[in-house]
Image 1: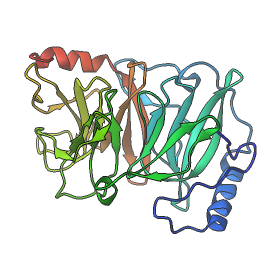
Image 2: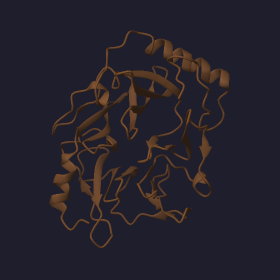
Image 3: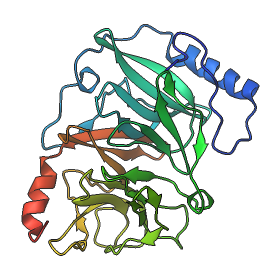
Length: 300
């Protein structure tokens, strides 16, 4: 993959296909000059060189990933040598960022303008960004491609995938609940509503690679505040269990949303709206999922 930190990359088309190459390039160069040319702290070791959290959620990579700006969405590659997220600058312009582990250290680069909400499939071969995706090639990611019909016509925000290739996704519409679509003999089934205990607002699903549980953000009267993270475990009969609030180790009176697990299954990362104009990325030990599983019982 070619990054702006070294050479100017091939410009990725924006999701709406409406920005000119020149405008995008100017924005990317301005962003890179402001945030990437200053000397960086040497980041070595796993998880961008960060000390892992315990049972209490902590800011992920403070001053590096999480800054006074607006950071959202976490996506590690399976080998955990690339970490993607989205950052908004002072002018509220979003860019997709990546930290890449090269020659024993992590180095940051701008991938391009925000294309969507990134998710990398368990095999590492596809980077989903909502209704579009890129495939891994010998030279990096492919050009941006559209999902096939009818999925491209849906206002998908986040699409995640299990090891079996089943898609789980939401939509920027209250009329569409969280849905799924299986891959059967190489053919993608039509989208179906997920038979899940949903609340008033449901978004940003993350499916476990083995489909044994699903996490999403929701708003309910019995919640801690605004958006909370909820989890449901697959039952022995194949159905989904009740929605369980993940609890105060994660959820606060602010909005807590957009969960993802590190590929090694050890840590849960999520967004927290710490101020009205600032959202940071947090992480916490993922053992809380096993604790909730034990409490729920009757799981597959």
